[in-house]
Length: 294
Image 1 (cartoon, rainbow, N blue to C red):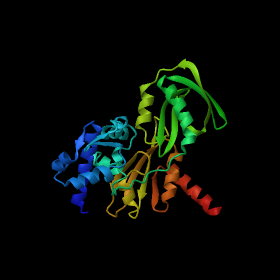
Image 2 (image 1 turned 90 degrees about the horizontal axis):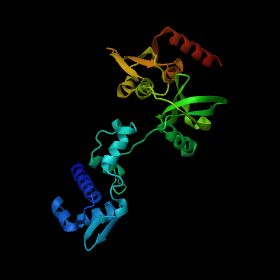
Image 3 (image 1 turned 60 degrees about the vertical axis):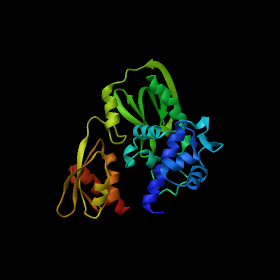
Image 4 (image 1 turned 120 degrees about the vertical axis):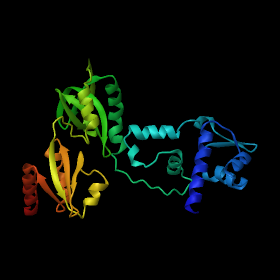
């Protein structure tokens, strides 16, 4: 099947799905006329290509089972993509694209390979418990890495690179806690008033090292790996300062702590060089010397 035929097929199936989802009853003959295809082609659409849908047939008329009506529309999918932060992953979340991604009956040209995620059983109990607590603005107590935390104000449940964290305020300091390591979570009677500046930091920060004060790290990236940094942000709050004539890049990253950037720099050594600050450069050199000597 050529590319133009594939597009027409996807558009036809998307239209049929949309009409069915809108509780319309469709006939073979009317669909064949609408799309200028044979009756046999429409029968194949409904009986084979869309066999994953609970379609009911009665005297040549087709409709979607009442239990499935409106359960998952393209609008729902677009909304979920937006609020979960994956909207920009897809170039065009229109009805045709969505149906092509979701339909198991089509030999889809798309294959999405994403992050690895924590096992569901490790995080689900805490997610369910904290969701309600956060919505009610209630303080909590919990244990975390053999330490007891009391009167904590939980703000947001944050997923960063497939790992869930609790963003919470402890003694007026915004912190992140690995969700699966929280134990003995107890809701307190006392409520708290959320502060907008904490919400802004959580929502605007690129990661889970929350801080209202950050420092800049500048690195020089070799021409051999420059394409990876141009393709997407590999460092927290990354910004391309300059593309040099040699093909190298000067890249800026704003971080809250050296622990946020040093492991990433070490991953790309020796194709990357720290320009500033000197403290990061010296720490990197010392850690590499220690590694080589061990």
